Length: 332
Image (tube, rainbow, N blue to C red):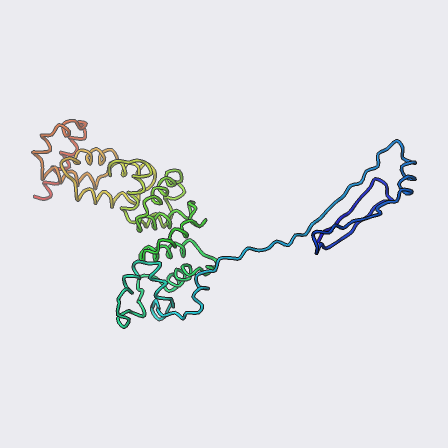
């Protein structure tokens, strides 16, 4: 369908038409847009001015739609499911051959040459029904409505366990996985648990610039100690656990301090003793001072004979000797 409107600078000559071109080899228009007589009478009156015609054309073009690629579930319509993933009292139907193609884990599970020995179901105990159904639906190409980051991460964990690599690659491309202070905790926890090194590095780089907006979030505070330490070390290039403690105390991440001190105290060695002492006295960490004093009591000769111990500030040496003395008296 096309429309044409011709406008001249004379009000008596204005024409338009609407026409559907069924045969594109033929043209359409006016054979007598304006007669010579009419044009002559107009031009005679307007000798000093130009006569202009403006054509406005509109075209409606019917675009032929390309054929869409069929989704996986459409290709399986003629085959009834022959396998089920069982979650509590719920079941998610699937096809054995399809699961074997997308997952080496399922392939190994279903690879028996004896048809009678192949299982017709598998019990899933570590994922919810909603997660399993969403994961299988995604693999089959079904649309997932209102997909949240939490659900997407759960699908990724399921796919990670069963090595469904193609699904993992596609889900990680979703805009849901754009790092923000709100999405950080779920994404970094997934990256850490599933050993996604590149994603974990990306998270640590993000944390470096957004520490203040993340450090007080309940999810972050509830992280395992080892994860928080790993994020801090990578984000701020911290070399030792004492560097991590310094950073935590300087930046209001105190929730890890006691647990990290307990961990260090349990593995303190001659090589780390003086570092521990410097840290404890720098930050007036009385409970950790006692840990250092206990180590000194048990290793006095070796410690007091070391150059590192002698290089400690005199007031620190005096103080730890006093703490050790008091601790030894309490033991006695």
